[in-house]
Image (spheres, helix red, strand yellow):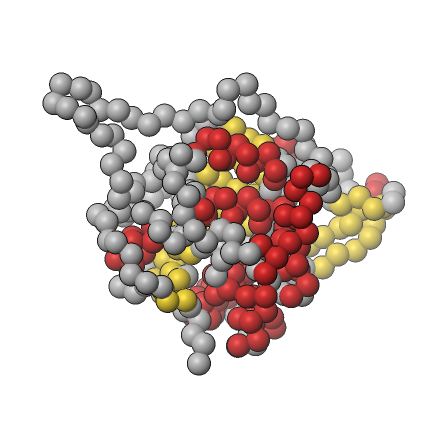
Length: 332
């Protein structure tokens, strides 16, 4: 019988990564990252420690956002990532309790986000459940159907999650997750709000909907083996992207990505974050999410993915350019 997680060959265990026990409220919370690698090496007794610094590539300028535009050299990437929408029937596109209506554009204030449609506006609402004070922490990687199932419920529940990527051969967070939970298995979830930590994708989904939703698991996440198979088929178009570690520099603070699981534009960015083993806070903003309004207020525009990098101060739209920026800044 297929279990709700994947098992892997043992990895080399590094020093444990310590996590702070107390945190300020999420709205003002700052995050830092400690890995098993040495970040301030000393080459001799007479030399001062060398600290890695991060900055945007020389002459880098964030691009202007272009809604529903695909850069010509990225067409096949976006098409491949779009196959998941078919196999998963759009699971994660809408926040729980989503509803929409077509209204006159005059009914929507100019400072409020709404999708325009031929002189009308789409008024969207949802009914998200209780909000966790601190982000849920999940150890996982892209090329895993069980991990995808959990990412989909994160989108449905409109949760913010601190992802610790665990690609194969990753030196930091895969060993940490194995040491914390005692199993070579993913995904692994830690809820710092309750102290609950668990394996098994179906158990994680059930926990999240009971704690932060209405207690009902969406149909496409409750079909057992069929759910797992279609989640696996959803990754065919990307051929295992986001699964194997690419050497990188670990930043002191997690990046912040505004995105949601079914979006093919968001998918290609997440793949690179996972391959480079870059921790990131994902602010879920599926259709109906109140966080769409937050981006609109921040930038005067809504589009995902939207990246905020506290290590360099860069804020930007456009998936192709985000991928290039991340690689130029963090890849070795």
